[in-house]
Image (cartoon, rainbow, N blue to C red; front, side):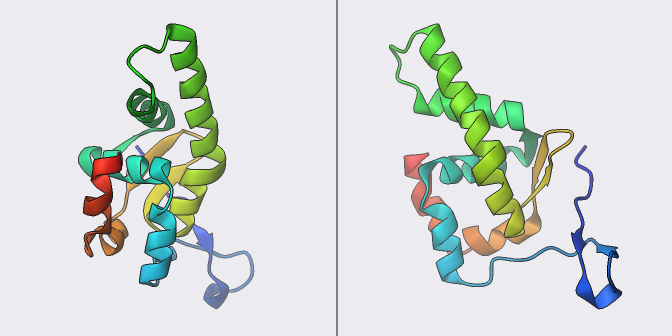
Length: 131
């Protein structure tokens, strides 16, 4: 299960942790998040599954990005590349915007209700064709 990854809350004093998370504040931020095809795939998969592990997400995304005639080594390399980009780029970005809860230690990822602020305008639905 995904553990809380609290952020510092300046209202509660120095060093005090809070469970509040930033939210996607405007349409531009939502579109910035959705500009990247891999992030769209990530959010699409999490919309369907609700939660998963980084390994499971890397596997699912790399399957969608690989060509049918890719050999096992190409698929392994693609999965590793997806995993690295999820851990270092995409998951931190969507977590910072309050769309997912990401437990770096356990490798668990869960879609948060706040993700509806991105999907409610239909932006994710329009991007699903690319995922």
